[in-house]
Every structure is written in C-alpha cells, then in structure tokens.
Image 1: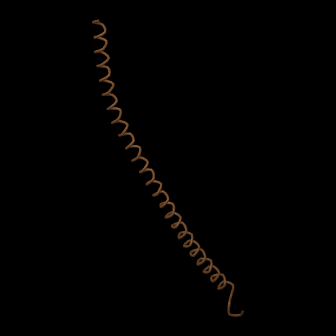
Image 2: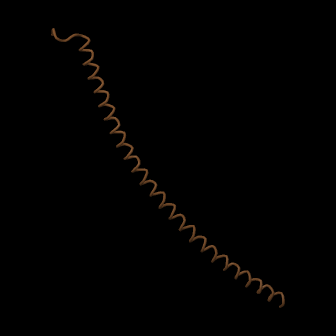
Length: 92
C-alpha cells in the first residue's frame, strides 16, 4: 500500500462514481425512450379508435339527415291532402 496515496485514491473513486452516474443516466434515458414509444403507440391506437367513432357518427348523422328530409316531404304531402279533404268537407 505504499504506492497509493489518499489523493490518488480519491481521484480513482471520483472517476468510478462519474462512470456510474453516466451509465445510470444512460440506462434511465433508454427506459424513458421505451416508455415514450409505448405511450405514443397506445395514443396512436386511441386516436385511430376516436377517428373510427367520428366516422361512424358522421355516417349516422348523414343517414338521419336524409331520412329527416324524406319525412319532411311526406309530412308536406300529408298536409296538402288534409287541406284538400278539409276543403272538400267544407263544400259539402
């Protein structure tokens, strides 16, 4: 132990600690990158699900709108018939 002095040992310990800190930070970042990738994949699937729900809702709304237009025409026709019947009844 004559060849090693305390200042030299302190430098070696500091170097080892620096390497440990760098390796720990590197491992931490690798796991965070993996977590972000998994999270973005899940949000991508969720966004696709929302897009499908929006497309389904839009199709249902268009169908309802067309059916409403058909029913409006039928009601208009019925009003004309009822008006014609009322005129006929008033004449009699």
